[in-house]
Structure formats: C-alpha cells, structure tokens
Amino acid sequence: MPDFAYVARDLQGKRSTGTISAANSREVAAQLATKSLFPISIAAGKSSERVITGRVNGARMVSFYSQLASLLRSGVPLLRGITVLSQQSGSKTLQSVLQDVKARVEDGESLGDAFARYPRVFNVIAISMVRAGSEGGFLEDALERIASFIEQQEELKGKTIGALAYPAFITLVGVIIVTVLMVVFVPKFDSIFDSMRQRGTLPGATVVLLAMSNVMQRYWWVLLIAMIATVIGLRTYFKTPKGLIAWDKIKIKTPMLGPVLLNLAVARFCRVLGTLLGNGVTLLRALEISRHAAANLILSQSVAEAVADVTAGERLAKPLEKSGHFPKTVVEMISVAEESNSMDSVLIQISDSLEKTTYRRLEVVVRLLEPIMLLILAMIVMFIVLALMYPILTSSSSI
Image (cartoon, rainbow, N blue to C red; front, top):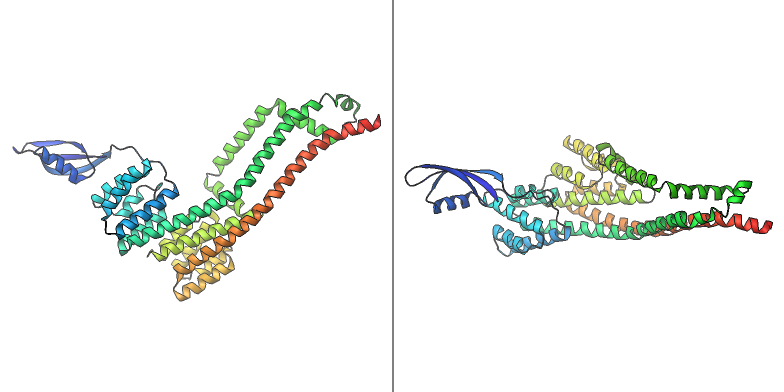
C-alpha cells in the first residue's frame, strides 16, 4: 500500500505529524479519526508496495475484460466489479495490479489513467479504448471489444506458432544428427584413410569432411563460444534502433515468408485502427496507436508519413498507397470507406480477410518448408556418407 504523510491536531489542538500506509486518503482520515486526530493535510508519499513488473497472459486478460463488461452490464458498480475480479484472479500479478487500480479509482483517478500505470499488463490499445469508453459512456462495449480483439490476436499468434513448430523441430533434429555424425561417426574413418592421404589419392570431398570433423572435435569449445558470441551480438544489435529496422526489413524481404509477415502486420494495423475508430478515438490518435501496434518499424514509418499527410488535410488512402507496403485492394477499400464514412467496419473486414488469406498462405509456405528442409538434411547426410564410402569403394575395386 502507498504511504501517506499527514499533519493533524488532537482534541487539545496539539500538532501531530507522521505517515500511515493505506489504500487511499479517505482510509487515512478514518484511521486518524480512531486516534481522535483531525487531519489538516494528507499527502501521498512513496509507495511501500513492491514494483509490479510481471506480465499477464492474453487468456487471463480476455477473461478479465469480458467479466468486467458483464458485471457492469448487470448493474454492478465499477469498484465492486474490480474488487470481485481481483479476489477471484488466479494471477498474483493481476491481483496486485487490480488492487492498486481500485485504490486509484477510489481516489478519483480515471480507469484509463489507472490502467496506464501498468503498460506491461494493459496495452496502449486497451488504455485508449477504455479512456474513450469512459468519456463516451460506452465502457461496457469498449471492454467487450478489447476482449474480442485480444482473443483474435492470441488465436492468430497461436496458429502462427503452431504452423512453424514442426519446421523448427525438423531443423533442431537435423542439427543434432549432423553434429553426432561429424563428432562421433566420421572420426572413426580417419585412421582407415591415413595411407590414402599419404599417397595423395584421397578424394577432395573426403579430405574436407575429415578436416571439418577434426576442427569440430578439437575446437568445439571455440565454435561454441563463437556461436554464443554471435547470438548475443546479434540480439544486442537487433535491440538498437538501427538493428530493429534492419530486422524488420529482413523479415519482410525474406523469400516466401516475407509477404506473409508483411500482410500479418498490415492486418494487425487495420484491426487496431478499425477497433479504435469504432470506439470513438480520433483518427490521428488512432493512427498513432495502431502504427506502433503493427509491430513492424518499416510499416510504422510508412504510417507515420501518412499521419503527416492526413494532418495536412489529405485522405488516408493516398499516402498508404504511396508507401508501397499496403496491397492495392486494401488501399482501394480504405479509399471507398473514407468516402462512405464507414472506416471502422471496413477496416475490420479488411483485417478479417487478410488474416484468413495470409494464414492460408502461411500453411502453404510451411508445407513447402518441410520437404525443403528434409531435402537439405538428406543432402548433407548423403554428402557425409558418399565422402566416406567413395574411397572405400575405390580402393576395393583397385584391389
């Protein structure tokens, strides 16, 4: 609980100061009253509560928003609803956050501002929609739309991860098989080929294979350190502003997967923008939020340039088309929606259509990746086997 510094007087008028830990200033006043003290001033001090840094998974947040919307529709007061959900929450992080949110709302802070204090729990989209819903008197609808939005995003994320799980498994198994062959199996042939190496009759492929195996055996620790250093270096670089842009550029330029990832980012941008506009958020503010929600800096920069054009009085469709990152069908639909004043619903339709089309493409790409990766693994194993067997077969035919 936060600490409150107080200045008070007792029944004899004697001045008294101190600190009290309480949920809010009214509770401080109540505690002072039990001590026959009359508060002159009460000021919030530093919080004695630990800093909440944990995250809450998407499924729990969907449940929270849905249940809070249902409670409010049933006539349950907001503070009572938050209290009930805090008590039944299975997440200690969410429970702590909701207790603090309740205390802040009791002190007169708006629900959106209280949510904004915990950006790791309540994302910027939810905060903006809650603020718009509170101001416009449609908080229940806003909460339901947030729940629906997060649920759809989690479903899409689950499908994407599920689709890529098998190719990742094949890659891991392939690396293990090749490593075992090179470190355990290939060195056993080194002494067999010693005489052929001295005579200079050992094939070049076999010489290369034995040399690679020898390096892996003797200097495995150097290779391991180099791999770890490379991974750490790349991760550090890709966290810098230049690195983030470079990584997003690599993602959208990758053969086969690039168009899929770009379309997913466009679909996410359209859904967030449509959801915000449908909840009363202004276009410029909604564009600013949705460009960050796209999770792709290249697309975000294109939208930022479009925001500048829209601020100057231009329609949204034209600068989006100019960027070259939005499909022509999407730009055309946005252009028609601007003329008919139905941007919010059209953007949601665009997002639904793009996600379905993109997921089908993702399935096709994954189906192609599986045989390609198996073929690459088979070719590597075949090279190892042929490089070992060819000298043996050659020497046998000579004898």
